[in-house]
Length: 310
Image (cartoon, rainbow, N blue to C red):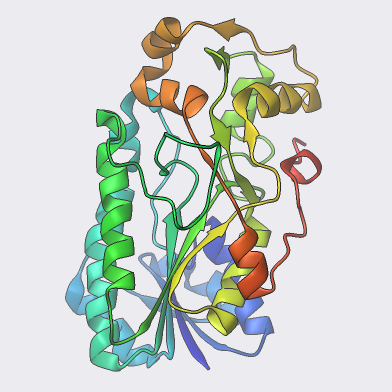
């Protein structure tokens, strides 16, 4: 089977490509940067340099790869500044809209039979009802303004992929990544802030987060390529947890003091409206469907055991 991975040099791509080549797939790794070609070759992939926002380049890449499956892992998420949440996700929003459309158009022309796309199950569910959501639950219909563009881009991606009746569209709603190359890798700015006491609990800290180790997410993606059917899958670990629970535990692992608590109004001044939502209103996600249909089990069933801080 021939697989084209778009976004092959990101944190997920670096985990996914060697798993696919190791499973015997012919992997074509699409990257914007020619400098990444040697590392992709070392992983056993055929590098293809193309800008996902240039439709002609994407069409040429797909014609060259002749894939049976396209795996869309395009993101451009660096440090997330919750005070300017919309700016932090602007480049990724564009990839989720224009990049998705370009890949789908090229895939349709090439007769691709399966299209697997990265979505977000960490920050996007409706902030009403119970603390843990399934794939049947809606995305947030009324997000706060700083998060509106991000959720609109996720909705565009999901509607486009699931609405493509010429292929089998599969959407993977990943939880918040931790592990190598992620924003919660050892030595990362986020863990550094927690260790220095610069990451307080806002309000009641009732926002529920769902995490997933990036290696487990890659394993689930391979399973989706092999066994998935049209639809959405939450790819998260077994233990959704409120901020008031996971943040002090991470601080403890770092040998830091217990995080201070600040009222919502102080949190809004320091972290913006999006930061308050992430701390107090977020909903987690259930992985029951992925376990059942993909026969997938995270090797790191809880962030408690899986998260390494050094």
